Image (cartoon, rainbow, N blue to C red; front, side, top):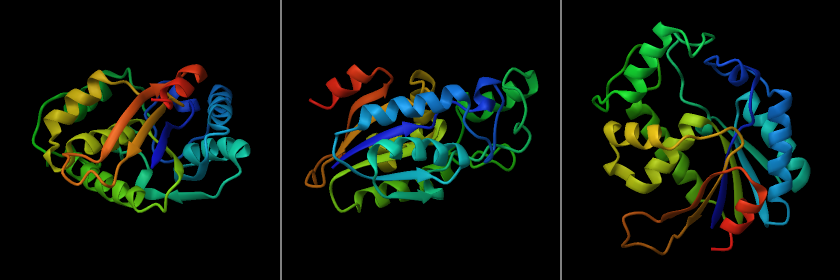
Length: 219
């Protein structure tokens, strides 16, 4: 089974470098990005869209579906990592905010470390496991998944490492692999690979140019 994972289009908060919570819609650029992805995915046999239930992901999915005309399922399993309340609505360039995000995302810490009221690594890993189980149960065909920056990285890291994934591994993977708004990641799931460490195969990551996306899927 093939999956196209898409980070939602740019939001007004993304453009202003503001940490956001659940709310917030796409910017004009973000809507154009979603339109671009919709055109890129036409004719690829996609049978369904599964999207986060956050407004920015739902808006992205709606724009993409105008090109695909398939059923759309919204699930909180694919929502973004819940940020600590201390940083929501604040600039990413604020020194205090930067210190908090460094503590959570860039420093090595135990899997159960929690700064305050955020969804920590252990929480996120468990939700990714449930999300992958949902995707593995799809009835065949190709699926488009619209999700978010941090959670997309957790999904991919969980595909690669499964239960062997720890916070230190995730910090390194996340730091060295940026995820852009509306980037497309192409992944295959091989249910018959019962003796492999993972049944998931990442074919292309964070693709932004339509030609690159179409080249990737011919591998």
